[in-house]
Amino acid sequence: MAKQITSAEFQVMDILWEQAPMAAADIADRLAAETGWSLKTVKTLLSRLVDKGAITHKPDGRRYLYRPKVSRAAYEKRETRKLADQLFGGRAAPLVAHLADGDGLSKDDMRALEDLIKELKRDAD
Image (tube, rainbow, N blue to C red; front, side, top):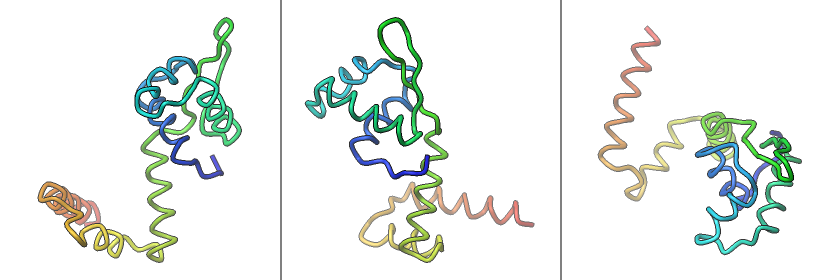
């Protein structure tokens, strides 16, 4: 997946990461209350995601079933790395500091970060 996905496309991906394979109509039903998108809009988003290599589809009778080609974890890792590279010169510490600024990290977040740092130090030894 070389091309950036939009926030609308991400909403479709989010559903497919949660439950796949799915037909366009089922995805549209899941998004209808939140977005008001029609089936046609969802099919357009699905087509764009196929073109971008983010999802794949296969025939199932008269419809297609869609599934992600990239895992959520892999996508998150790639996008986080890209953000850190673009805004913080690839450094993690300024990124975390920015997130912490203005109550961006809860006490649970801080504990999780402390645990992660301890684990990373252990693995580095």
